[in-house]
Length: 192
Length: 192
DNA sequence: TAGTATAGAGAACAAACGTTCTCTCATCAA
DNA sequence: TTGATGAGAGAACGTTTGTTCTCTATACTA
Image (cartoon, each protein chain N blue to C red):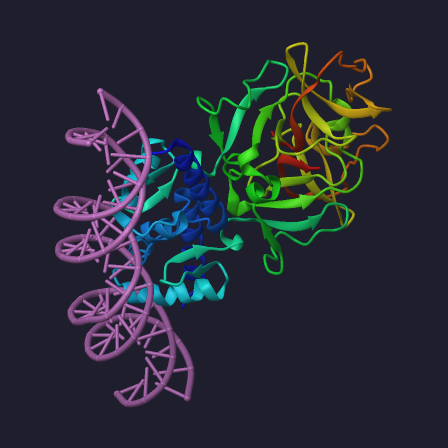
């Protein structure tokens, strides 16, 4: 089969999954490729499986692999990363799966203020907060202080715990009584 | 139906989709819920659709919605965000879809070095690079200098372009001849 | 030119799938 | 106790879906 045609249809398949978050059936693929015969599609699916783009369930339905929905990882800057053209031999990974360990207990929060600037967290960033994790010293936590929610380092001295900003212009906060923790920041995401 | 039972099965459905990246069939759901009757599942699916967790295709197959695979967005720190308990009326979004505009032209890179520290990008961060975007002044780009790849601000003076680090201890780089750009950094991701 | 390989058309079939109904059994209220 | 409600069992159905085959038309090779 023509190499360009195969590549184009491969892109069509990926686009389909990205849009529908579900793999097409053989009939859908036939329509997507502009082909009337399911038997022809069958041969294509074999190639896709051989390329590890998709897999098959027990009943023959198509299921995606990371290569289909993930993003290519090219290595490391300043270590001389492989040319973006060589698309083979590279790993792929999904942001969603990588960033979020406990999806049910996690939520997103937009950052305002500059109290965590030395930790590389600036206004407008999104942080992913895991409510199910117990904070340990040095973790960045979401905490309620004086009826307001803030993001601070979780610290300990002796038996007492206190909060510290990653910005020297803010003083430490020593909670008078109980400290309500809204979760531990597990990742930071910024979009330009 | 029992509220706890419904909630538990709702979680089972979400977990299934996260693990398989594909929605179950009615038979799969029956096995997942420990129920033998497909007819019973049918009523559950109606509730899931009513909750906007899933939808149906023309042929009755289940397709996911953002509520199923997305993450809850709770608002803004320091603006008094809603209690993590109120799970209604909140938006959901998918990291993958939000971060990556051109999946085919994007790739991931791990950051080493401290040249972008003032831009809030530190060693170990992952950056998402879009190869299809043209850089404009002020963008953070991946560029090849002396056979090495670096991450720098893209700058212009008059007709000439040059690169600037977000760390005053590194000097500006004025490329002698051609400057190879590997893409524009569109987002930064950090995991603790 | 003759021969070969290959993509697609098209039909056929068994298994899987969504959908609908009826019936049973447990729970709860009056 | 009686009646109502609702979840699940189970069977039945028409359709969709994956799979396999045969045949035709086209492109390429020698």
